[in-house]
Image 1 (cartoon, helix red, strand yellow):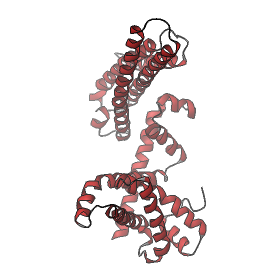
Image 2 (spheres, chains in turn orange, brown; image 1 turned 135 degrees about the vertical axis):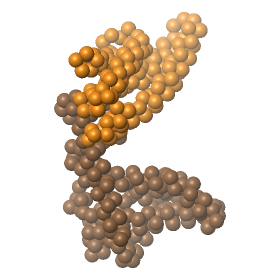
Image 3 (tube, rainbow over the protein chains, first blue to last red; image 1 turned 45 degrees about the horizontal axis):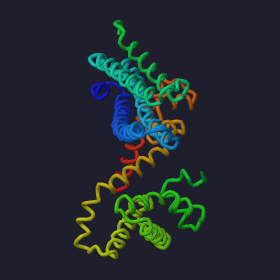
Length: 154
Length: 187
């Protein structure tokens, strides 16, 4: 919206196209996330209902939970991208829309943090997992941008 | 990449007419995905039927290239040949022609338009710098994040969005230039 409304900004159509592509990806990922989590939930309930140790079942559950972490990992990354796009917009868009760009970065940082949290939960206690590190880095990146764009001097 | 890869269609047609085998290879390479996309995406033919159409279309191109009146109109000519062969393939499978042809064309014209647009974008992309082609492909086709693009291309992450926007601007210019050229050649 910020780019679309900034008619004097030469790169606005290109930024708008990127925002649109990211939005499409986010919708698809949210649907994938829902399906993966449903499958993981079924596996969790199956494990809870079963008595005793079952290596095959535990392995299947672990795989389902890992799959359930994949979409949030990408969503966390998309959040960082949205924040970066907002940063590119805020310095070039029409002044009227700067607050909207800053708001977009804040929302993206929130989404990225929520997605990183889901990655952490779905990967369990594996704090040294590179996927978790990647999600946390995305969250940090989005938050840094949002804080910078939200500074009162802007 | 061959010495014919960057040759405009009209010059490629002339080289094919002169019997240059390498030019023929380039023509097939340049239009094989296009023909296949019309057959599969536009007319939803099976892989086997699409393969038959593919073989037949390129045979006809080979045999009838001399009948092409405007050398720069190679693509629309190939599109027309392909559409006709697709309709023949559908008719032979039991779909009535020509009454159903119009309905079929109307029903599938949106898909064909998508194929045309995709091909036009692909052509326009080839007119951009390799850097632009690469970064647009990474973001829009491979769905890479800015961070991944930045790491793999070793460029600052904060500049990716602007770079992509500028490359899109050039792609737009390229597309508009081609459209103007196409309109001019028709007049």
